[in-house]
Length: 161
Image: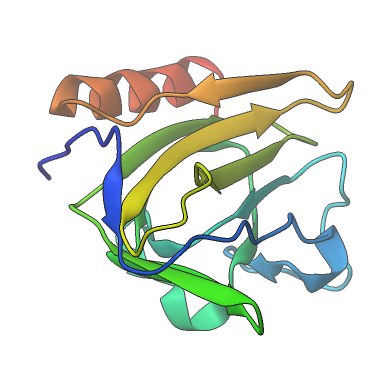
């Protein structure tokens, strides 16, 4: 799997911010969930324009997912966008990969920010973040190489996950 970093991507129409992290109740479980499941303190939530998680295509299952802790390799959708009655934006992205070191009760987001522009073309910034239960937010880098993915998997193994 080849991964690339993205600093900005051309936007086709004036941009508007969109997206919010869903709650656990509307998150699609990406594990064999029995009954109510293990509980919000034992799972991680992922939200964003996700194409695959651990090589499983999940794009048609929504944008919010519930996962068990561990290393999860996430690829983003290549075509993203949002719109309202006031305007819309769209972007065609290169292959972007994030190796998430997922921990229980944490939330993981794929975020977009768009600088204000009055023209038909602008730049969009895409980044991943992790939010701890105490509200602390840190950015998560895109996987720049296979080594990033291997290190994530080694971390999960060292945690017994």
